[in-house]
Length: 295
Length: 123
Image (spheres, chains in turn cyan, green):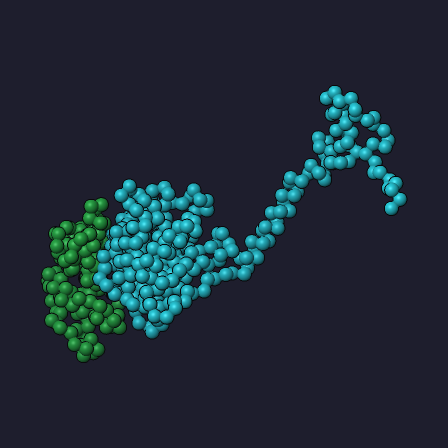
């Protein structure tokens, strides 16, 4: 997903994109699994469930093959997973995840009874809702539908954390504003903001209306920042080496600028082009003037 | 699909008012073992619609649930808690359908996963 054109949500709708082969990656590719687990652990941290040792009932929106759900199970929570891709859900079923699964389109609303869930997480799913797959779909309305029904089904004081890959700041703002309109407080926490590769966006939504909602702190890794600076200075040096030859280094084709060779070459060129006023070449050509002004 | 999930789901077809509970049509029911966790049961009880839970269980020919639950039972009645746990978490509807109580729309359950996608004209 490095380049802008690589975003999978631009290639096909999620239920088509996550076919059998794509879903299979989520059980065999250890890198994908590791990243998903890390994202889930951070999302759980941001969810800030009360530490009373009680098992909670959580929602996993866009649960996919249930990798994120496994992390929830490890922490001793029960969960319900929604996803639109049947291939991914089948993989989840095969992996014998503990949570209960439903095939649902998040943009159509959750359809859950009010106040039942103690929290919700969503890993890398929200950006899928920002694309209209058919002419009748409106991303804003679909987001509104999701957030409205989510607000309703969460217990008061519960939180929802969406890890997402917004395409641009406008999209992130559209998502946040839509969530606020549904009654949530909160905002986007950006981890590793100085590194374009490690940067991660978490939309943290709070249902509590009492007091000023405090957003959790983002991780700003100092070492990541330093690496960036180092890379930048390295890049500059490289550029000078490659492209700066014309003025300083000198070569047969392009003699050192402003030196004697360069002047002789320019004069020869002008003579060749028929200019009559080109001075003769002498031993004084290209020498520095003596300072005659007396100062 | 577990009965816990069934108890929390409601029909989200646009304009439907009588949306809860889904009727369950089960062709195949399986049992999976889940760790007994009385704390979770005590936590979930106030959130459940007990009548819908009991009716659905009876529809699946699962007996053993009382009409009403007292605090005493939740606290220390081991036999009740075991039955509650079994029906809430260990019974899985593998094949069948969820039926909207108002419109009669069928949402099929295949391999234990209910398909609750709506058609375009329903949302």
